[in-house]
Length: 592
Image (cartoon, rainbow, N blue to C red):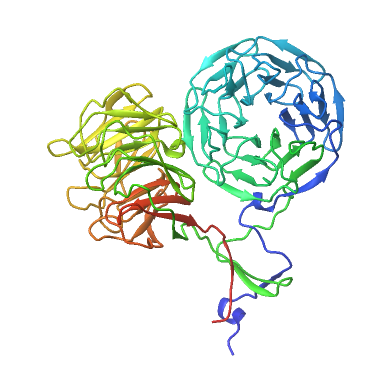
């Protein structure tokens, strides 16, 4: 009888535990010593061996004290000058900065810490609580928050060591978002708009740009690290134990916290973090996240025998594996509505019944609910909003006749804003409410016209290489992908770098009027004509691969969400399907 070693030239490894797909997946949380004062909604700074927390809410009320962590125990430090809760903070144990918060009132007050004393410095321009914070006492950054009067803001400010000055705003109003990184390289992860979102934005020192979504929508979580190696953990109390790691491209779930906790601050780096305090009140416990110095990382094609579970296993990347499942049906059944948001927080507007409709609905992952209508009936329009869809979307152009009308959605009502420069129908759109693209369309014929939206006005930019309508567009206003289109079904795909469009690898199957989801480097395209088609293809930034088909073949499809968690509305009218990707890489071999 042939043996494995005879065929392959080596024997199978015997391992007591499975290797992991990446180093960060080898990390675990362990118990640490308690805080001296249980608290939540505090500011955090520093690293695992030199951490700092300040302010917050304790069972006694507003906390004015601070505590330092040496990697083992917490020790009382000097009090902050203004006791407050919902305060933002970041930096190191000797270069920390805190700002904003709730007293009452909502504060502009800021303080810096030198490792011994807190010093009051010039206040922020906007009084707000539950802000995100990045940077240090020499170069700080804050964003978002809950203001006076009670409203949510997109305000972003920079601190130069002396004064705060207004900077470019984040792309949506939000609060309870995690701030990660430095003044010139920061992340705003998750938050509450409301609803709670999975969105992440990246700051380069000048502008905020959408980047890859979290796996799970969350707010009030801890966050630490950098824009290429970040960690978030905790969130809405009392059950959220989830932890996610970011490699600069993708968020991945890693080891859970032992205790669900929210209203916490981030301390540490991606591979060595601290989670302490939080709600439900009172929490004084501390957990420490560490990654071993040596982690057994699985290699593509590796095979081993797990001596603990007594099964044969192997490792193979499984990008794009997943399936479609049925979701709730639209209340107003239709095809080709505008569709923005995520799989669990979606906005659908307009569409074709026939006749055309201005109906607008929101989706919570289970059911659709009617809300206020568009002012102008239309379909196949520039739908802009990404994961801010349910509270911040834009509808531009569309049919049945070519129009330049643009409307903005604030979570309650549609408001007419400045028109497109070129009236058209059958166009595509992508980006966010404050920075979008309207792509292609039809005037008296198919066109390659592209316009950018800056939150106020449309500006013409470079055309597509190929004129087309009914195209699916995904990504941001500076990093987009436009997929296929008409006249006649096409297979061509173009990529946008903020200035010019470039042809990239074609779809495997030429189609039009399909739906798209994802970003420029990781996207899905599904359904369409001729057909109806059930085909789904995955783009990995280089090429297209056919993956699991739709449950119901659809010819006129709208899509939203990400390449791992997408939503589709199609034909038959109002039919909703949800795509969920399987990312597990460890495979168990069984006898056939």
